[in-house]
Length: 101
Image 1: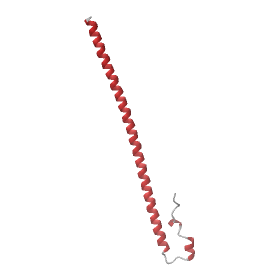
Image 2: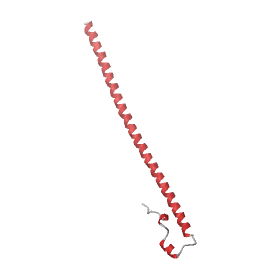
Image 3: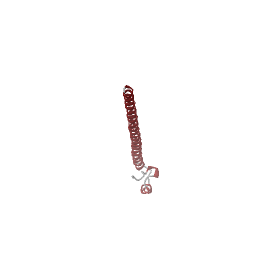
Image 4: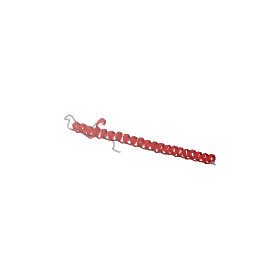
């Protein structure tokens, strides 16, 4: 009888250890999956932020170029050696702004 009780107690202990091991394994897997999901989200946000920064720089450069061309056109108009034909043709191509999108 004592041998059976000891055997049952040992089996219960083994079962509870195995169950705890399964719980730990499951917790590790869930935590790993959550961590990977967070990392993917963070990477995605970093990529979006990088793309927004690139677009911001491009818009700023475009604005600067537009302003530079506008000022150059104004300087071209103030030239004293322009003829009426030059005025009718308009500024040279390199001073023209591309159409806005």
